[in-house]
Amino acid sequence: MTVEVCVKAAVGHPDTLGDCPFSQRVLLTLEEKKVPYEMKLIDVSNKPEWFLKINPEGKVPVFNGGDGKWIADSDVITQVIEEKYPSPSLVTPPEYASVGSKIFSSFVTFLKSKDPNDGSEKALLNELQALEEHLKAHGPYINGQNVSAVDLSLAPKLYHLQVALQHFKGWKIPENLTSVHAYTQALFSRESFVKTKPATEHLIAGWAPKVNA
Image 1: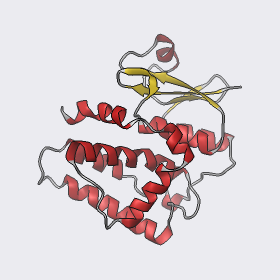
Image 2 (image 1 turned 45 degrees about the vertical axis):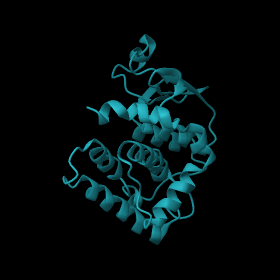
Image 3 (image 1 turned 90 degrees about the vertical axis):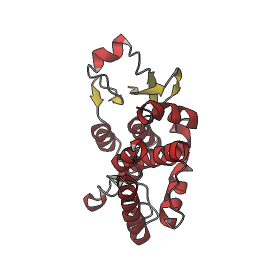
Image 4 (image 1 turned 135 degrees about the vertical axis):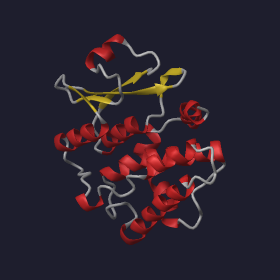
């Protein structure tokens, strides 16, 4: 039975992989576990009928493990993949599961912020600093030597953060966060990441309407 996954297509390029970090997280999980899959690209501005039938909420990603059941929500999907394909294990110990969990929301708030004094930059820096301290103590990945689920959730978000903040605000992760820099480099150079990442221009096009709102 073929594993199928519906993911976001690039804005204005329905045949190209788009910039959804939650879709990429699912693709990364399948790639790291070497599970063959069929990827269906969904133009989210013009969702096909068949897609809305299987997934009335119309959100991506959705996943079908070969049993005809479509599952939404990247948290649920990655859990299902882990149970069905336990090797190699990507289980993150519960005590590390929430490391970095506020980085993405802090990044979005800062990205959209028009007021340099609203504290949004400081809030993001605090989250990145906390990640730095965790990696210093436990790295190179969040659970030590091996990649786990929490890394695959964070990797696309950190990529969005890097590309979008550099483009829209000329902002970079501070140099002194050396463990965070080593971590992003290690993640972004993994074969699974290179294969599933959106092109920079599609990522920027995806954020532009939100930044300019």
